[in-house]
Structures are given as C-alpha cells and as structure tokens.
Image (cartoon, rainbow, N blue to C red; front, side, top):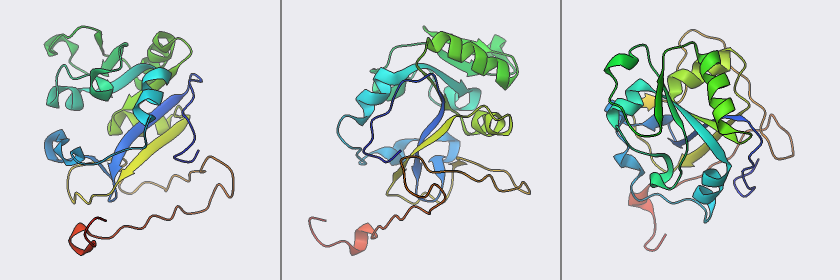
Amino acid sequence: MSDTESQTAAGKVLWHFTMSLDGFVAGPDHGMDWMTGISARPGLVGEYVATTGAVLGGRDGWDAAPGSRPYGGSWKGPVFILTHHPEDAEPAEGVTFLDCDPADAVRIGLEAANGRNLEVFSPTIGRQLLALNLIDEIDLHIAPVLLGDGIRLYDNPGGAPIRLHRLGGGDPTSVVNVRYRPAAKAPPGD
C-alpha cells in the first residue's frame, strides 16, 4: 500500500506506528515530544479513526501516558492493555487490562473490533505477534527525524531477519527510497 492509498477496515491485525527514520517509535521513557512539528497527508488520521475497531497496547506505553486516547482523542473504541499485573493498573474508561497470552489478546481485540482493524501500538507485543504469525500488516509512517535513542519498532538481537513484502503493486521485495536533507542544510522555505 502506498502512502496515498486509503486504509481499509478489513478486520486486520495492524502493527501501526509513526517511526523516526532511524527506527524509533518513541523516545527514551516512551517520550513522544519528538512528533511535534511533523505532518501527515490530509485525511490520514480520519482514515484510521474510521477503520480502527480496537487497540491493543502494552503496559509500559500506557503507564507513560495514562488515559491518553489514540489519534488525539478523536477515536472512540475499546483499548486493551496487555500486562502481567492488571491489579495495579490505573483504571480508565474504555480500557481493559488483560493478563493473557498475546494470541488470546488478539482474539479478544478482534472480537471487540467487530470487523474493523485491531491496531497494535506496542513494539514488544508486535514482535511477539510477528513471531506467532498474527500480524497481517505493518503500517509505518516514517517521520523526517533521527532520534538516536528510545524505543525501537523491532529489536531482536541474534534473531533471523524477517523478510517483508511491500504492498501496493510493483516488486514487493524492492527497497523503498527515502531522501531527506538535514534542516540545517535546507534552503529557506524548504
């Protein structure tokens, strides 16, 4: 799928993040302030609001921003937080804390999504679901920033490479070309 194709609600398990060019989905301590000043194509957030039926996240991310809702609060739906310690979680409306294996969390999330997509907002859970062959698509928005530190999308030291096939036609194994200029070198107005 190219960046200009609309997202569809097809009951997919979608591992979805905005990511820095160097592979981080959050800064240190799950900080998200690095996303200030970036933009997305018009209508993109609305597509995800319309196609997302439920969200599955992890406890570390939840604890870093308790009570925050996806897409700036414009999305309303069930959020599931996978944790080994639901008893000490801060309760929030529309949030269910699950203590189960990741496959069961996906089953619960897909059922709650009611035919729309289950979005996975956790690098750790996403990696586990990828190993279980439960991720249908990885949907990334690459931001023009280098963080150098933080929470990586995928971290599997010593593991075998995971081969991916790009969606949207053409050669599914072709590299994606991305070109940026450091802001300090950008001409005025660029």
